[in-house]
Image (cartoon, rainbow, N blue to C red; front, side, top):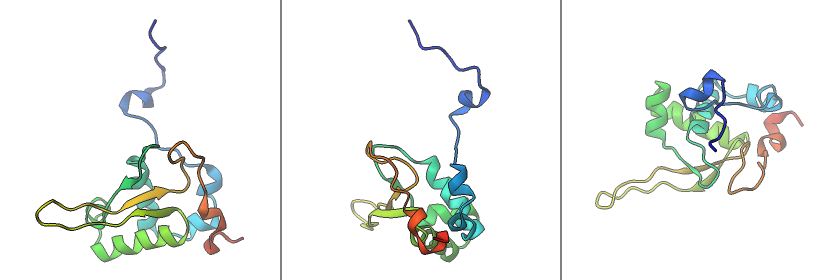
Length: 127
């Protein structure tokens, strides 16, 4: 027997991005720049439970349509506000290839552990 297919149309196109209302309406989220809020969604597109998200400044700047300095600032905002945590630094090597920074998204599960929700404890969260 096969699994029952969902009649919902969004399941046919590769999934859905959902954000908890508590996080969306939080002072920490509203304290972010628009670039940082958009980056939050771009990072979530790449989220997988079993590994951190590899996403670099160059790719973020291109997807956001901004200068790399603005993309760097957006990453810093998300990190300071507790939405992301650095898992692994970037690496540049002309012989073996480069690797983007790896991020843990604190509002989502990671390696079968519940989210840490560091954004709730950040200074920008209003608590």
